[in-house]
Length: 192
View 1: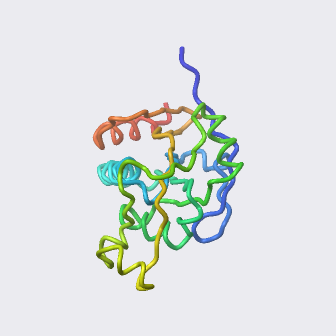
View 2: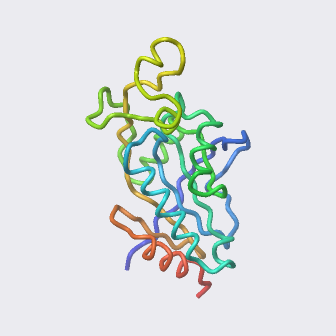
């Protein structure tokens, strides 16, 4: 019989500055946890989009109990305002936490995940959504008309952790569809 993965001891500030304690959540809440960063070119936006779609598929009484928590591992660029704006593009109900510190490193160890690390000159160009929308070309940033977000990436785990009623948990390691998330979240909501 598989043992449930306990929630890590993790308390971090939200994008509004309030503290969010992952271990002290309502008994009937279904909590999903993901570590990443807003400049991520692929995994983070795809995962958040899939979770938003899955949440939309749920019956209203279950959807209201689902809390998606995104922990940034890049606090230098992911200011509370930038993180909130990025998450709002997926679902305004998602919670953003400011990590990238020893607390998140300890939580990652508790979850048996590798620590996040900065990677210089990633193979995929880093383009922040604001750069693509507002400023085309490097020359604009060089002459003071914009801002540089740095040319580094963050190597981070791609797992999504979900906790439901009675301490039940699911670990997703990739390739999960919105339909599969929605089906599992419905089962995690059940009190049986």
